[in-house]
Amino acid sequence: FTFVLGRGEVIRGMDIAMEGMCVGEQRKVTIPPEEGFDEEDETSV
Image (cartoon, rainbow, N blue to C red; front, side):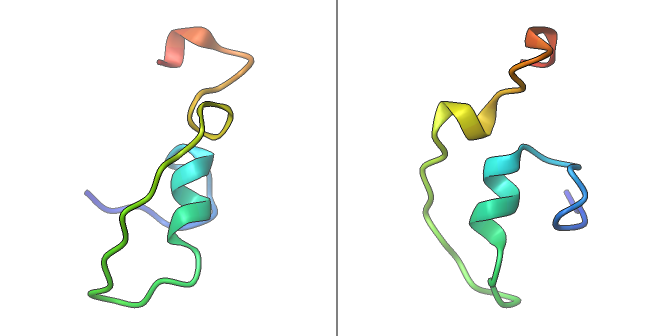
């Protein structure tokens, strides 16, 4: 899928993890729960 970095189209942890990456680069990341879930709306999980 595609998304625009920094627009909140994906979980915050994904935006943070992808910052500074180059086309074709690969990373293995671990996203902490507080960056992966919306604190205000638990139904979005």
